[in-house]
Image 1 (cartoon, rainbow, N blue to C red):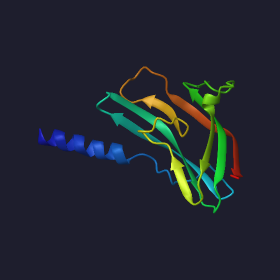
Image 2: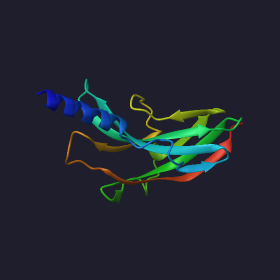
Image 3: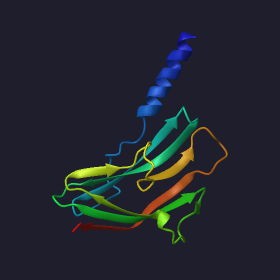
Length: 142
């Protein structure tokens, strides 16, 4: 019994901290602004949900506020669900203050800086198989 508990504890620690680092390499970088992407598991025991998201972090290293905009393209099970969409739901525009960062997280109701990847507690559901941020535009905020 003690070995089982120890094994579960070790698995949980590796699972929680074994995610890719958000600081590995930027997805896109220009004008002192870098965009990073990382997968993270979001488990809410109270709601009974276990989801994985691809989170977007934008770091502004300049001395000016910057407006960052892009379109999210998402493929689930090999089929692009958003490529032909004209919906504003997949268009993102955010202002990043000078010398700061913004990022998506598990608790936010703002879906702009995250992409749903998969359910962790269900097997037969669609999964994110490819993603792209298109039409990236970075400009000084006036």
